[in-house]
Length: 228
Length: 277
Image 1: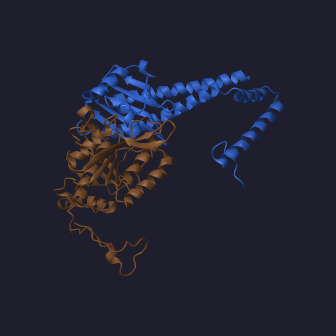
Image 2: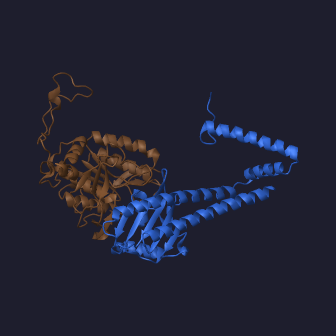
Image 3: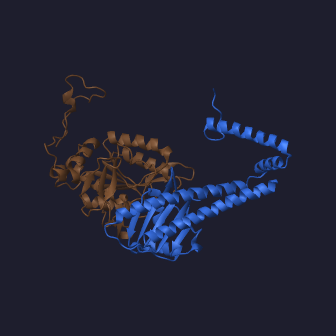
């Protein structure tokens, strides 16, 4: 295997992973929409670098063409669900002219009522899940918020994985010489004769064990080794 | 009921013989604490309530006048300052909370400290600075219909929550049911609130299985909204100001109560406690 081959294989894996997680997000909003009999459901991802929320997945009203649309992180219902970390249910949002204008400009669709929940993973707020225009179920509000919270847990895990895949792709794109070196080394060992190849693999295994031991002893990679 | 005059400073770490008179209690509690004793006839008059949120729309018909409003502002260089709030509410959340408090305690003194709305980035330090400002200003009750998941803020928030508790500022914070840790509602020195779905605003329940300590009205509530309007909402964000309003009523009747005593009164007058008597 050449360095280019390895690079291509890793890139393909990262890309497949990213696509898979996007499909998972789409599946989550589709199921959320179906469970709540809603007209639409959507997931927003927080882009911390730009302090913006981004449409990441949409089911129902609106369309996939909205995926990628951005707006400031503290505006709109999604924004304040994100900053307060509190789930929220609103009825008749159309009564708020500012909301209607914002929603229409963003999506071309003005919902009447919505439920929104922050997507939290460990200590990070990753985004917001919204369910729009579900039929009224008197007496079921608390139960619905509980159920939406369960979807939020699932969506947060998917968003976390998606972000990890994107970071991997960014690292791959910008890796340059470091990854090339690793790729060349792997390719060189792969191309050796049987005996020398076995020695090479043994060397790699020893290196892996050494780095693995240090990593286990140190905690996060890159931190200095503890004194004994 | 007046506070007894103290001729000597209170003992700090111990109670020597003969010093009992220094810690005579200001409030004589009846054998059975009733709601009538706790807050009957109270309007929340004289109680200073702070809404730590997205700001409050001034002179909203459901909110009325604010005594003061400030915003916690972060400069591009990261410096955090407290400025007069010239913008009011940036999203409606704080106005909704203020309107609920006003509906229960019509004569309380409402203050706004804006910590939300300036963007997600940097919102954690702004929240801490706003809470510190509220405690330093000695508000009787602080409504926090918000939380943070940032672990590195937990220690600061915990210290502030304990400081508030010992300085007679009752922090009232929204709980949530999501599978992550968030703060400050989980701290024992805070009064944490979840939702029940009854329609009576003065119904509240003590939860014998914390961390959520009380449940208050949080479903299908008509709240004050932007530009003088109102809107029907559900969420713990709106259960929290119900407990804030009820605390303002109790403190209106018994301003001497410490947060510990206030929680005790709430426990003794909770809907599930009254119903069991």
